[in-house]
Amino acid sequence: MEISRREFVAGGAAVAALELAGCGHVRAPGTPATPEVEPLRLVGATRGILVGCAVQVRHLRDDPAYAALVSQQAGIVVEESALKMGPLRPSPTEYFFADADYLFEFAKKHKMKVRGHNFVWHEQLPNWFDKYVTQANAEHVLVEHIEHVAGRYAGRVHSWDVVNEAIEIKDGMKGGFRNSPWLKLLPGDGIAVPGYIDIAYRTARRVDPKAMLVYNDYGIEAEDEASAKKRAAVMALLRGMQARGIPVDALGVQSHISAGSRLAFSPEYAYGPGLRGMIREAHGMGLKVLLTEMDVNDRKLPASVAERDIAVASTYGGYLREALADEAVIAVLTWGITDKYTWLDYGLQQREDKLPQRCLPFDAEMQAKPAFFAERDALDGAAKRNS
Ligand code: XIL
Image: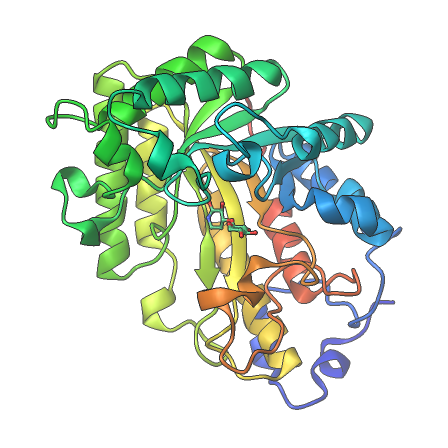
């Protein structure tokens, strides 16, 4: 049921706000997205853009409505945690592949591509990691890990986040590198990129030559100074890798972004020239760009659902239009698909009032929100990719 803008915003929010949200075709909240609405994966496909989301296999198993929504909307999926070293490695000699295997089967059944996330990260490491891994055996542990995991799924992975989040300016290290456990274990020669990065990418290429190899990071999207510094360090890392002949094919821009206060962007969180410049630079270096983990945190917004939905949609639309204007951007994944399951409801990401976040394209009842239409319209407006 298509409703007028005025009806939709009855409840107080301004019509102008809806214009801002860029919602060309607004539906009543609660209107099912199917069957008459074209799913995101199809809209993307007509533009040569892969569209999908992160999933939790646990809920693919226990929540049929969720599984149906994912299969309908996503042309590419990634498991939120199953392929991380901690969840995958209960002990130094055991691997737990059941969840990842389930996802590969699910994806095959529904003709989806799968992303791998990730080989190297400073978080979600196994609990045995600190005691077991030393400078003496670290290279062996890393190489063996990648051989085993990349090897199992070789030929079936669209792209691997080989290294995740290696830059953290405030750690004060040369090159802006994060002072992570991996850096301490495998620092390299201290001149160029840390040793672990070099090793991880070379091993991944050798074991699964078909997978696109991605460097993935966050905090590089916005216009503030901290983001600009981090962007510069990430691009320097990538240039260094290329100069050293390290196989890297793409930049993963996580895109955990934030809706500004009230109905407009706050300058601090506006997305524009910095993002565009970074993507252009990556493009010029021959890299592809993937938006790998998009969601829009609404913790700066008041409780009103109508206001949040409009501002979140506006942020989706504005951000995606900026990013998709460059043809190097070949994939868009949201970090989840329904507000029912989002990491933003936990820990530091949570709203102060503890209300559930409205950060994803579908609500907790699996109904399309304005954010869905904003994403769809941005995809619709993108130029067709050739590759
Ligand atoms: C998050 C998952 O969504 C959570 O379920 C888990 O508890 C912690 O990790 N950047 C990343 C992702 O690269 O791996 C993170 O995923 C979100 C931030």
